[in-house]
Image (cartoon, rainbow, N blue to C red; front, side):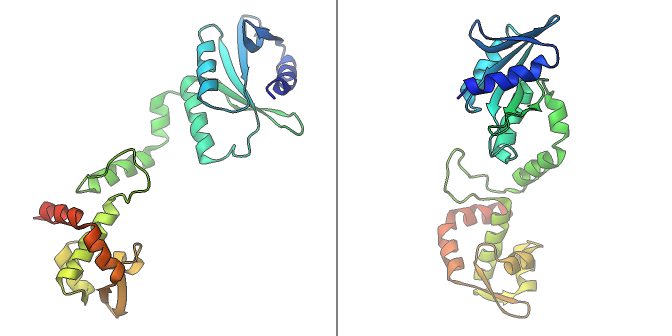
Length: 230
């Protein structure tokens, strides 16, 4: 229950000289220390409604926290994404252990500038741009789930597959590399991520049934890839 968060968080701040009380103009926990005012919104879950409510408190209060019980997925990717949003908004996050009632400030209520966050993610930003630039067809539809995305890697694999079909379904790696123009064609066939290729001898690969099925399934994409390569 939200009320079970009140006492441990109130006690935590009182040890630092804050004077606190509950339900001050609908604020779950309101505190003052000198000229500084602090609000803590007590919530069962960290969801959009709690973030919205905390953001609205910023109109009236200097510092705003959201207080929740310590979740089991605190260190997960999805929860870290939530903390990222809180940092962008300048909302702090407090977690309380259900067992010991230990209070921990997970994120300080200081707004992080977007430029600083981008600077710390340069590698991911570069990888994003590289993947976009590598894609030749750019025919994916956003907002859908369960469909096979045409990534840059899949495009390369399809060109290798189509080249192997053009060579009769079985050929040497050197022939495939030269005709397809894909320098990593041998690696693609060796790794066989999609299960389209079979190694039948030293430096020789052929198409398996899954590969022939893929030629039909991705016929339109292969057409666009071939047209773009000419």
